[in-house]
Length: 54
Image 1 (tube, rainbow, N blue to C red):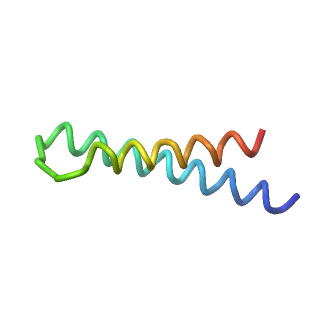
Image 2: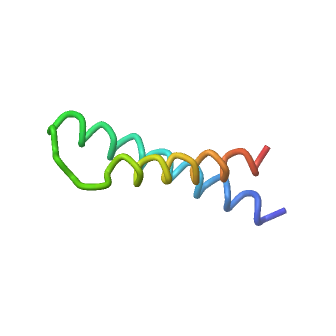
């Protein structure tokens, strides 16, 4: 069961990183190549890790 507690922490951490990164990119109008697919992959990974915990 300890594996699920770790996955929730990782999922929440990835979600925080995704929120900060997407907000910063939008706010700064940064033209970072492949930021869309990278943020999408990060969001999917965070969602899966959070969903595994339930």
